[in-house]
Amino acid sequence: MLQHRVVDQQVLLQWLERYGHWNNISELEQLTNQAVAQLRRTRSQRAANSSWVRRLQVGLDALLLTDQLEYLDMPDFDPERRVGIIEGLHRFNRWVFAYQRFYRILKPLIQRRILEQGRTVRVLELASGSGAFALMLAQQAIQDGLDVEVTGSDYFPEHVEACRLKSSATGNTVQFQVLNAFDLSEVTEDAYDLVVVTQSIHHFSPGKVAMMIHQSLRVASMAFVGIDGQRSLGLYAVVPTAGVLMRAPDFIHDGVITLRKFYTETELELIGRLAARTDHVNVRTAWPGYSVLTVSASRAC
Ligand SMILES: C[S@@+](CC[C@H](N)C(=O)[O-])C[C@H]1O[C@@H](n2cnc3c(N)ncnc32)[C@H](O)[C@@H]1O
Image: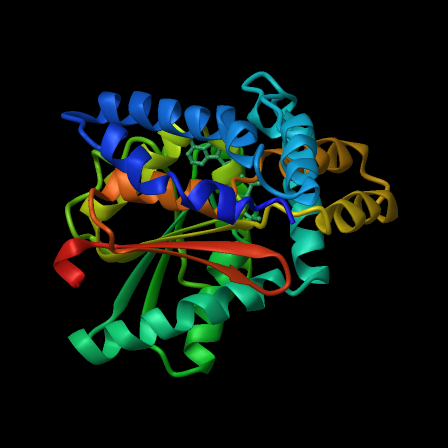
């Protein structure tokens, strides 16, 4: 309901033409920020001649959109409470079977890569948080007979430390490392096949997401896959209720801001196409409330 596909898709090509020329990564960041801001600013003008329902959706969405920081994004926020929010998100993910869903999204790509290359498929997860998805991915791949090597990572050392403890406690082979998703310069070219990021894209500005995709396509020989919540009204009934059930006020605070920050699928497509400078970009909805952005490395097409 908050996707504005009809309104936004009309101008996507113009926006790509206007903002698609950049020479270095800091220009990419700036231009992508401008492109998404401009797409949003002019949305109500484009909706002016459409039905009242569409105008209402666009107006409501403009009110919901926010720049407010989540606690998770405040550099000085108490590390213990930060870990508490990540654990809350992990519980929520388990309740809604999010990890299984993410695995089902990635599995066809992994299977295709195994068929193409006949060797271990290497997956790097950025912004792993609790690390639970990286661990589950590795375990499930073994059960399914898929030859996969998983590396998890996060910017905050306290998360990485907690992930390492979990990995060794469960006898898992997943390695975790501290990695800034916007600076992958230390990672060797084509060191991985897939770079994956779940439920984190909305934390980052459009320009930062573009930087992350651009750099991921250097280190991943196959594709970048970003999975995030879908911008919709439906999730407003689910996420705060889960926070109340968990009696987790920090989770409710961050959860509500999250819903207000999710990108629309056209915005994700615009960011992906600006970053990759190709049209090997696919955005789709995944039940029950996710948007999946896949950007293929051009050497994989
Ligand atoms: C909402 S959590 C998502 C965690 C996990 N992927 C999940 O699906 O449950 C966002 C994560 O992004 C991480 N993060 C924030 N800035 C980052 C950066 N620059 N590089 C890597 N990770 C970052 C945070 O530490 C946090 O773990």
